[in-house]
Length: 541
Ligand code: ZN
Image (cartoon, rainbow, N blue to C red):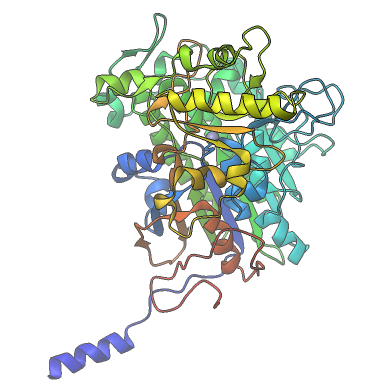
């Protein structure tokens, strides 16, 4: 009896789990293509930044819940709280037949009204993002807040930063660049000069970490190319190669650190935001797949880079909160999966491609259906019918195309845009959504295709792996949707939450930490409680 009451008294007097401090600096990190599968495979082996972040609140089953699991839509969910259907960022590229130029393919992070531009020779812009980011909201609430975005890709920096960034930098063909018309910056100049000097002398070959030695096992993917080799076999160190070298992530961190110091982030009158997206994991995944020594080498380096980054932030001496997630997951190359027990992991076959589709409906000579790619490519994602075809002819062609696609085993589902626009959001967690619900989360009345085509699981839309990419993402399947969501701040009591949440929950969760109200109805996400005890970090409903 006495023991019991002593225990009860202890329970009452024991300090509650350490309350989460209100941060002066919010640090939002995206690791491009860092799937939950990769996180789980490596999480016990991390010793640096990715070890530290696991001591906070770990949602291993975060979801980029939508079907169009690409970089631009994914980055846009993270700090807006909106799914692609709300942000308008439904893909990396879409077709806009009303675009004021000959090229009707529109890149998500460009301004197509710029004269002389094309979707791959463009002027970077945030004009397509329909809703505010966390940074936009912080600055609207208090002008003293500063917002900085740095990334290895322009679309990553732009979609995380939003419309009112103080500094926005992205890797662009050999150096970090900013939006047209923005002034030069001393920190960016310094980092760019250092990169130029490094490239001039040549980068050392990346060492093969001990952890990765057992993964060396060459897998031929074409007559000329194999994957599964040490990264040290890389070709000469051109700026383009930087994208598949850990040094680019390190340079991204160095620039984020330099801007943090230059602007004295975290030491102003209001909370500041630093958004950083590390791109090399994605480029390595595309170039070499996810399960070889190349990706292993990259993740070991990323873990170290994050350690350097976080250690620097410790030194600022202000409370800061970190979230780390990804824009989408990823999947290994078909050839290696076939060798490792998954024979139905395959590449898209030409007889289900765009050319075959147009031929099957009687338009072999003058194709009427297109995607954002070329006419010899696969059919996947948004499929657009020539807008000059109207009335009954249009209805007939759409029905014929749908019937043809539905018969072929390459495709899991085909929806019309109108069907998806009429599909209500699921009330269930994202791991329980139907394919229609996943596709509806990334549909837009103006930007989406007439048909939205979902491939069967484990079918790679890369038909020829000899050209460059051997593996990719973009499917509605969980290997592409599941991403880790890790929250960490100093003194926080961590916990693991295996239930699924969405990346759209990140923005309201961070907003709550700094007491920033987000009006209900403006976003799709919800605040997630980061306090392990009785208190809550979310506003009371
Ligand atoms: Zn990406």
